[in-house]
Image (tube, rainbow, N blue to C red; front, side):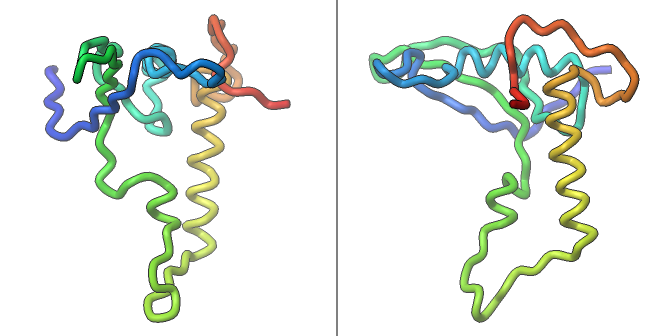
Length: 131
């Protein structure tokens, strides 16, 4: 069955990080998302295809094609605008639901699966740490 993707987000960033910046490059991020795709988890954002290297405005860039989330990310959900006139409030059940989804996403990053009792994957690099 062919999957039709209608809406995507394209994350584009320079290929090389500035000197002294200690962070993952977009290329590394894309490769980690490729690894995580094997888990087929609804708690991990989907990446379509592999990270794509290109040249834009005479600079080497990396593009990652990601799932579009129409509601935005968690920070958008938590954003409170004009809290006097129009406060946002959340039911306790909603807060626990978000917490559960976040915990399952971290579980998948650590173990490569949502399934309890299944052996953890042998990933070549640390995706997240629990120290």
